[in-house]
Length: 414
Ligand code: HEC
Ligand code: HEC
Image 1 (spheres, helix red, strand yellow):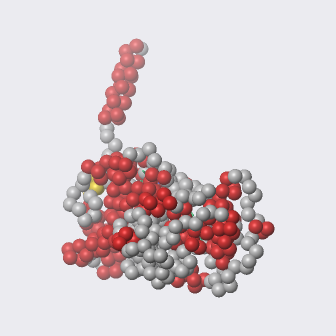
Image 2: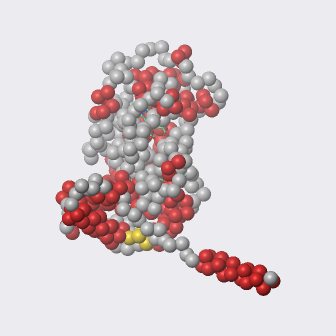
Image 3: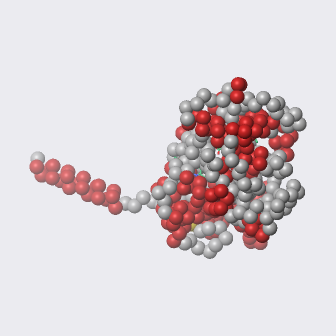
């Protein structure tokens, strides 16, 4: 009896030590939707055709592996080999991010299904919270900033305990996944359209194009054109008027309560999820709650979502953006301070401007026009151009400000 118990214990201890020794296999990238789609609707096709597409799928996998490595030995697209920083990034990502963002970075982590909004699918190369103009890639510092502060009001946690080094490493890895995803989608679309992959030259061109967009954005930054005026009751009231006059209410509702009213339908976002206009009165801002953050959301819009850019609308009246910021801040403050939410009685008395009545469908559509080189605000311009007495209307911003100094001067006045 005793001997049997002993041998049972022995067996158990061997079993557990064996299990402990067995290392978890390193994760593998899997084919993304665009690649899987190549064979998705081929039920009726003949075997030969199916074989062609299966071969293309395998070739895409090989090309990706060669150019972007494996999860634990990742290569940043356009570089030759993995780095310690990327491998550190992989370790952090696997520990802190993969359950939501998935091994491929396509937002399909194990718990993603239960989350709303969904974790970002990086593979589209579209990011929401940028300091760059509408339609541009984020700057690396934008991603660092987002990971550090999290996305308030969503499941995306704040990683403010990460050191600079950790933040940079995990963001480097996010970029590696993003470039990989963008290339995969491009290759899948070549395969779909041409039934073949590009030759070496074509491949280099494709890669250069993907990377150029990221390089471009690193020099574009949207800076407020004017210094923020003080936040007064008057400014809040003007802000509310503009809010109604420029059709913000069409999506966000008269009092900025947005999607929480449950009756605003505004279409899908770039990732195929039902969009919902932010509840601006919640006091929680996904894109950050500094005045300059809210300024940029209004001026640049939010990539991939129905929130348009209002850069052109306020070209001649840049202070109007600040008044809107003040109105939005005030709606949030009210709730926090336990004041009554805004109601009909609070609507500003002057009627909103007629020309931009809330039904101006075209105005918001034309705002979505992609930003061109000339219209984009570049950091160099901001630094090089002399400060003029009067900002002229047809020229780009003239304030000489660095991001840091702006962020300091842009604190709320009260
Ligand atoms: C519990 C789930 C969860 C975890 C864990 C998580 N995220 Fe997220 N993440 C999200 C969600 C949800 C969003 C989308 C928010 C939105 O659309 O407003 C997001 C968005 C992002 C974005 C996109 C921001 C933009 O501008 O579009 C980045 C980058 C990001 N996460 C990086 C990370 C990194 C790096 C980690 C780990 C260190 C991480 N996330 C961990 C849920 C998560
Ligand atoms: C076509 C619909 C639409 C219109 C018009 C619109 N918005 Fe939005 N807005 C949205 C959506 C959708 C979001 C949320 C995007 C997301 O994060 O998914 C949003 C988000 C925002 C945010 C970001 C809040 C945060 O959480 O960081 C601000 C600020 C904002 N809108 C202000 C405005 C202002 C001011 C106007 C008018 C000048 C305006 N919006 C007009 C749809 C709209």
